[in-house]
Length: 201
Image 1 (cartoon, rainbow, N blue to C red):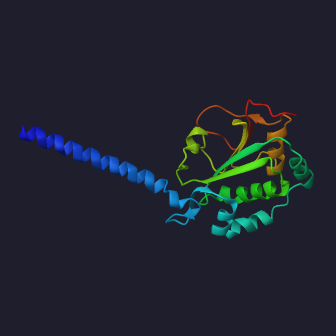
Image 2: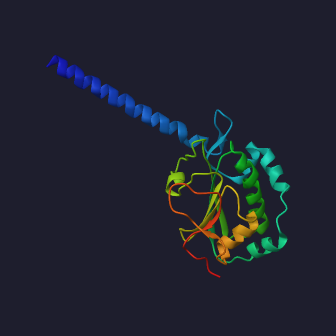
Image 3: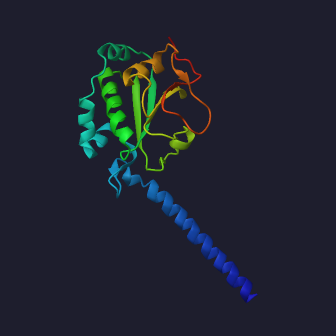
């Protein structure tokens, strides 16, 4: 009986420690106070704003200022009259994010269209985020910009656009359907892809 009791107690202690370790791992990845702040490696983690990004990494603002978007495309983006939500997942440790995120932010700012809303999430090197978006949205590369209308995905830009940021942005939210269809499977190749949901002309 004594031996059985000790084994039971040992198992209980093991499970308790394992549970605490699991909680600690999650807390390390997703601490609420970390939103918009840098971790021990100097990278942003969690949901952030454009200003928080630029404050932590001023060179990204400078990169944005150097991008010259096509004015005729920007004007067309300004005229889009249906709401579109963009969910961006990126890593401040990632050179592709350093290159492409500032360009996208420059285009979004230049379009000056209140129908466009943006949510930005900085992920760790394993491409995980606190809200589980990287899994539900099949994020295998960063940066990835997912375009949504009424909660349904229109398409996405994965790492690099197929044409330019502004041209692919416009194609995703207005058509015509000249983009590749989004492939199935866990891994998304690079480029811009349109989902089966056809944007209104």
